[in-house]
Amino acid sequence: MTGFPRGRAAIVGAATFGIDSKPGYSAIELLAKAAFAAIADAGLAPLDIDAVFSMLPEDPFSAMSVPEYLGIRPRVVETTRTGGSAFQIQAMWAALALDAGLCNAVLICYGSNQRSGAGGLVRSGGAPFPFEAPYKPRNPTTSYALAAKRHMHQYGTTREQLAEVAVAARKWAQLNPDAYMRDPLSIDDVMNARMVSDPLTVRDCCLVTDGAAAVVMTRSDRARDLPNRPAYLLGAADATWHRNISTLKDVTLTAASDAAPRAFAQAGVKPADIDVVELYDAFTINTILFLEDLGFCPKGEGGRFVADGAIAPGGRLPVNTNGGGLSCVHPGMYGLFTMVEAVTQLRGVAGGRQIADAKLALAHGNGGVLSSQAVTIWGTEETL
Amino acid sequence: MTTPIKSVHPEAEYAAFLAEGRFMVQRSASTSEAVFFPRVAQPVTGRDDLEWVEASGAGSLYSFTVVRNKPPAADYIIALVDLNEGVRMMSRLIDCHPESLSIGMPLQAKIGDVDGVPAVLFQPVEGASA
Image (cartoon, rainbow over all chains, first blue to last red; front, top):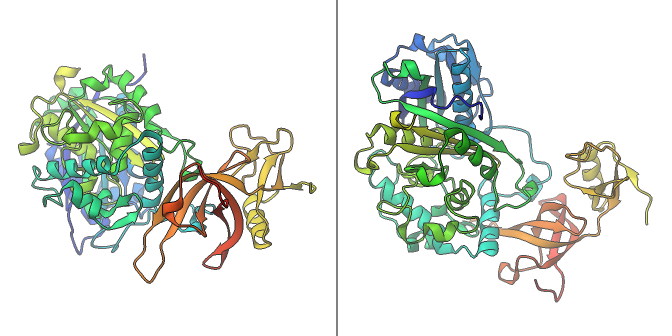
């Protein structure tokens, strides 16, 4: 008995908007386009939404701004600010709030004009880092580079194995007409690209795009009366260990190793049961770390696990089937896009990248510098 | 052995010591466990008997990365350093080439500055290797 309302809430609507470069749009305008599209996709009207779980990176008061913009008067709001993992955490609270009867239809929504508007990385605020910032790490990249370097030292992970992650993501992106980068990419291309923070080149780093995403969740009884095939939330858990990379005891072991066993226990499934894996791949080292910490391979084996195209189309495990943050979209907080892709796969509408007969999908979120880790497991009707 | 200094305003005092050219870390008076980064109480235990002591400056390299810049801006090395006191900090490595570095190698602290701001920096111990 985990107490989690397994399968009692589902995503019934999902949408993205502007996942490339959309000059002229503000972040909330992008968010609203995705939000209204997700509500329509659910077969609902805006006033059916009575809970708004929002995230605008530059607006600490999105809990008020977003409902106002949409013309909704929510009875429940939520704005967890853990960075890119916020959306998995919001899905967890949405399931609990729906199950408790606090609300009936939750909108989870996000928007950023990072590429066209901010002209670079969006600063999402937060307290300063007085004991790291004086050294001028180029964060977030530097912190992930420190983890990558240590992983290579500790486990023999190679530069080529990191590149395999980027190449696999690009091959998936080439099957996704919405993906931002679809040019051919080889291991040599990744390794010979401009070095940003050793050992990570620019092709080991996520995209900088605009983009918005939104999903709608209801209780499962209602979900069955709506037009789309519901994606049921079977398990959801998160864990938070640090904010400064210098306080993470072992930089090769993340809090995903704490969250994942709880999410799997709630769902009553094992990593080997998962048909499609959507990870937060802000950097190539992420995919390797999270495949380990989520239990898809032993600690330290992630580099060898991804070798030889193992997570690319046709490989042994489909990972980041939309092209991921590396090749599809990364507006600053990518987490909601992993859930949208999981839903797309479970609905069976992913087109050329569809995983045949996908019944179980894992959608993971990462926030900060490996700091906040959140895991959601979604299933079709037959997994209930 | 200098007399320990009671820690009252950890963040400001750490910076003030640095400005005087001193690298100080906190430790618990009752257990001698070191604390870094400086806090009003020891994490986990909440023990608030923290005092400042001079850091040994000796440590080892836990991980590092070269932050690459477009010329004329210079590249620089960001490191995570395990202090012999048992705590870890971020720093920069100076007076060395990235190719000469290996994880685990001994380092020694040196007070310097980053763009004019006082900072604890590290350099490899002469003649040492990991």
